[in-house]
Length: 504
Image (cartoon, rainbow, N blue to C red):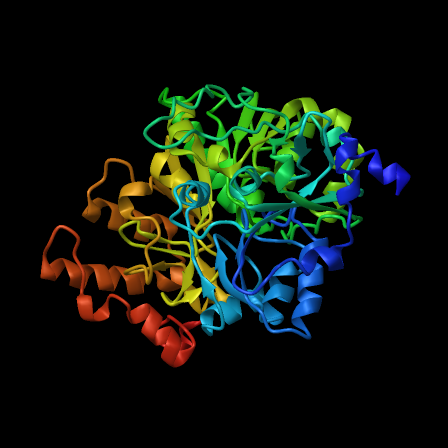
């Protein structure tokens, strides 16, 4: 413990060290917890594990607020324990997803830039306990986060009580990587003074009121590796189409070979598409994103990316060992910020980002569904895609053209749930091709999407729908009684194809 205490530079806090089980006993039924963690990185671990154990023998429910998804199977375990009343703003666990869709607990799907603002303005319940993972606590009263920032800055500033989990698995070399800035009250704030991805505008740690520190817990839990899968032929084809689009932008003078700062959403498809830039002519790239995945560090190693700003670092097991084992190599090219800043509309618009996010499905007019399977069943949540799509220089959505062995078309007559309206979507990409929708009327969009993005097995079916829709007239033609026919056919027959035997 003596060596552990060296991580707490303010010796007056040494007496507050407790075990996770004791800290978990402070949490009472009905409380709201603000947990650090963003896409399986930097999440509080020890106290939530202890809460799960309490839940096996005691009935209580709490609200769980985080940055995004939690690692270490915590969303799964908390959900199984039945101790969640309400969860927000994002999750990505199959068990929790099932319980959300079965209405076993509540889920609020939020734009990731909005949560901190809603906490400060008291729209959301007040935070009873902020439980945040840290590398250390400095002598001048700052908590040094680990591999994500998420909403931790706001949780700490607004919470009634704070529990700090100091994770000895994380290197103290992480100190200096973070840039913590929180806007002032709405109506009284100044412009956020960030003009370039590499700018630093805040502190290296989270300032805190020492009177709020209820306890400090030491842990030794590594972050969970990401669940991304390697690029495949289809994602490589998508990357090729995206490169083709970007080359055209350079050719006509809207971009240079440096492009513009890039944002890429979490997940295998977005990671694979970004990976496709490694062998491209684009260079001196910058990343301004929520999450840094494997592909960003591969681009750094290839000399393509010279700086990356994000909210968290979420890596595969192999890449995690490489990056954290050689942190000195990368740390001068990295900064981690609160998600309120990484996803802030003011910054996204100012920097002129190229935003690349993943769709579940999109329709022939360019409306995108990112969240709901067949319009009703929550997948993960909107995450930050809405923050970026509405405000980016170019909002790009990528998806494979089919799913479930071809039984599902990712391009449909009418999106079963709309997270991003056609007004916020500039380019859609599948392995079949891309459609640049900028400046196009609905009828122009429909023709381009059907011809360029739809899988051949569904192309004729969508052409027939659109041709019938044209007979009905209107600015955005639809056959209302057939608009969701792809989805109803899937529910009834297990495929979106009109004839089950059409798959060859």
